[in-house]
Image 1 (cartoon, rainbow, N blue to C red):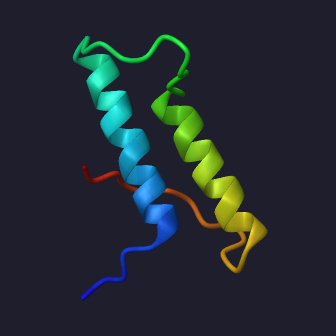
Image 2 (image 1 turned 45 degrees about the vertical axis):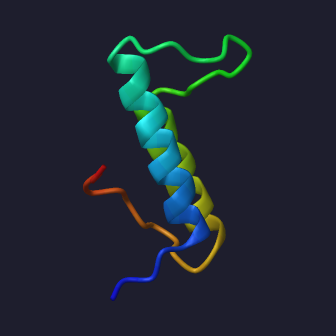
Length: 62
């Protein structure tokens, strides 16, 4: 069984937030939801800071 990590949980939340934004669902005006490209960029930056230098996001699964 794949391990569900904190990083995976954060990415899942960001994806669901992004999907809600794309669907036009209301969200809190004080919370900024980054674009999916920004989320991917941040994920790759965090991965590079650890043991996964050069890791690239190849797919996103909701």
